[in-house]
Amino acid sequence: MSIRSLVPVKNVAPEIESLIGAFLDWAGVERSFARETIDTYRRSLERFFTECGVSNVEGLSQGDVLRVKRLLMTRGCSPAYIAVIVLAFRSFLSYCRTVRGIAALDPKMVRPPKRPRVAVTYLTPDEVRRFVDSIKIENRWAGRMRVRSMNRPGLLYRSLVEVLL
Image 1 (cartoon, rainbow, N blue to C red):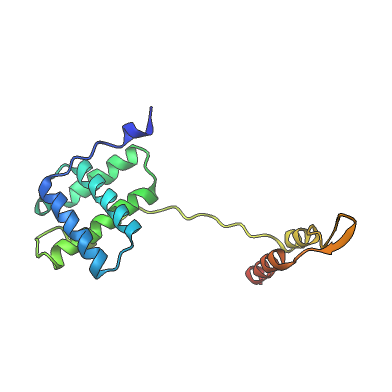
Image 2: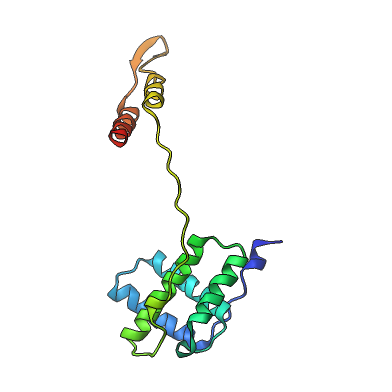
């Protein structure tokens, strides 16, 4: 199965597509969104409305949002990817309500999925000592003695000590 088969072909109603374009123009000017952010929001909103299949913003319900999130989860999308889509949609809803005056779903009712916390493992003081001891200070090259720069390992060591203390 190819990855492309998991992503449906874009199918967004023209009215919503023009509203998305106006939102992204507004976000670029009023909220100073970077080009990459605008591109991500465009992909996210197009994906949401393709999966949702509605043709107007006023007709959206909380059930539609739940259905799209469930559909993305069953397709194996990560919680972080789904959160990007949901947060872009929530920002879009806020724009529709406040700037355009459209009676859309309350953005506070739309919540991204919980993302699992990543466990962070720190080095023990013994592991830090072994790391620093493994750095060669002197090196023989072409018969002459040269001293290596301690900048990078020293910076890393100082950072690790700050984390451990």
